[in-house]
Image (cartoon, rainbow, N blue to C red; front, side, top):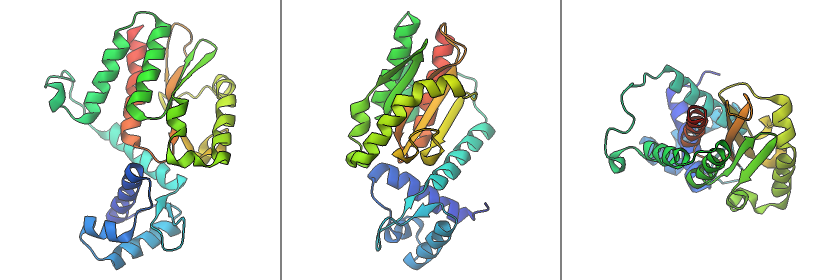
Amino acid sequence: MNLTERQREILFAIIEQYAELATPVGSVTLAKLFDVSSATIRAEMAKLESYGLIAQPHTSAGRIPTDAGYRYYVNSLVEESENAEFNEGPAYDVPLLDAPKENRAEHVLEVRVSSHASAETMIKTAVDALVDLTGNLGLGTIGNQLYLSGISRLLTQPEFVDLARVQAVAKLLDNLEPWLREAAPGEPLNIFIGQENPIGKSSGVSLIISKFRSPFSDTSYIGVLGPTRQNYQKVMSLVRSAGEMLEKGF
């Protein structure tokens, strides 16, 4: 799918504003952001909608991203990350309060994980930290058991006022541990968006998990489960970092 640069920017703006505000994004808001007319934005939105990347939940409402729109966005983040050149110097050679928010969050994660000695406690602490830093449900595998934290945090998100959505999430969680054992996703970072989830397809959530080696298994997992509306750049970075920190810490 070949989007123009402006279409990409509009799509990304819709995704990022919707993640922050949880309300459909309208053409007037985007017109101010891009300094063009509302008519121009509406024309571009119509094209994005025809590609299946955004949708209009109600007549006269703004647009929200679709699962396909989120997938395009996440793939772009992964591609940018793979192409980026990273400095090899110390990650925190500036005062913490002066560091970018993402670095501060990763620093908090690192401090909390490194303060424990046993593998089980480290994994549980990392999961709990992900809950605090992302507002999502956190999960981690410890041997043949699945440790979950933050279910109440997940269910307070506005997406889950619908009982059917809550039931779909519950079904996903009931089947997540056996699915992880059977499927054993092999990438260091695995991202399943909305309908891509192998279980609980109608739950409207994204599962972001990192594989790492632990004393319990070569295929241990840590990650989060949250609504498709979330800050993917931040969450993906934290989940990836959590897996790397745990593997190095054992």
